[in-house]
Image (cartoon, rainbow over all chains, first blue to last red; front, side, top):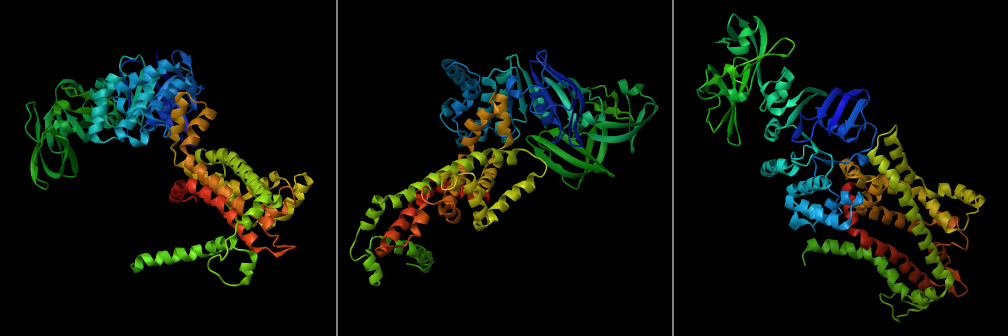
Length: 359
Length: 265
């Protein structure tokens, strides 16, 4: 069983929301749509779910062309970013509603509702109404309604975006257990690269209506095929800078390092390098590194990670490191760039070479 | 008592004064009313109320009014629910203009339509029927109901509709079993306002009826009878006219506050 977009485009008025896209999702594991807000993730989800019709192209589901078919007939489930439940029904009735519509027998409904409620820890809340629940519980109810149906595809459109940090972590940890081994196609839209990495599976990178890359999450994280993909799949944003390769040396402003591996095979000329913030460290790493003298502009803490923005000349770099590091804002500080983690993009933006250490 | 609480108290007293006067009058005899000034009825009498409840020309006034008002509320809501849904969910050419135009219908004075309606309903053999008044009142009640309901419907995210479709609900089933219960506060408020405006409207109701569907307000204009001015009787009729509105507003009082918050009431 697969869910496929075949050469699908979507125009609304004169605007193109989705440029020609082909994607094939399989059951087992998450299929993640990763992209910034308004990149087109939700439109892709709506096209896949049948809530919108493609302007061109076809949607294939379970070996059938379902392009013009209404969502009612597709046996799918959907969880929105906002906590959408039927406000006048109790949690029990909410979870039971897709089964009641589907004409399932009463004892069977009762059994499945209770089983699902247990998985999502909603047992004690069954008699309450959605508004009486916390945000996390409301979203659990929506999730329960989505999985109780045992549908062939589940769409989750940024389901954790409106939850607070702790609940998000908690629910994200449980999601794979809740959804796995159901033989369903799981499509999960998110704007957070970290979330994509944590959930694994396959990822499609979405940028301004284009799917720039699709593949196993770890693969595309390790080798973004182009500049856009590298930027989409990096949080904080990947550092980019123009460099010049002459002989075995890379020149970046007044920094110089010699290349190894793939990068050594590159022809001489101009390239753009991309280096993830975690590969610019505030302390000397074990790997070979190039020291950079910068002036610290901004420092921030994100959980137990430190982020420092520093400048060298006109260029701003971002460094991300585990642990809490104190850098004085405005003071000079020595950072270390690890060239083996660099990506080299050619003039068209396509990946030309990677450093020897991938990932 | 401090001045601060005295001011609203005096205000409320002033507001209540005419209603009190009406109530007091309804328990007086006409002779006492005409006889002079008295703050309380000197001789309490229920004769006025008794007269209304035993005289068919009086109590049928109430029944007629209730029939066409209820009929009007039902027709208005049945027409306004789908219309408001369309305005809240779909974009179409001229939707905003049409929506505003609906509202301007409320600005038209009923007197303008009295003559054409009279002619039209007479020609269609609807003159002096409850349906005639109920339909005529749709002129201002449907736009009002659309306006109120659209506000409540727009407060329900479109994602609710989509979730229901994905869950397998057909549109009619979704609309009746999920959507309408979700905006029941709005339906209550809209029904109340339809009821109220239809209940207090006199001109069209009077023009379109003669005997069979004569509303209570028209009956009340019959001030003089063979016994002279029956002021006590009229006062009692007035009190009974206020009661249905008071009962209805009691049930929707919380919802109306919500309607005010949405800016649609």
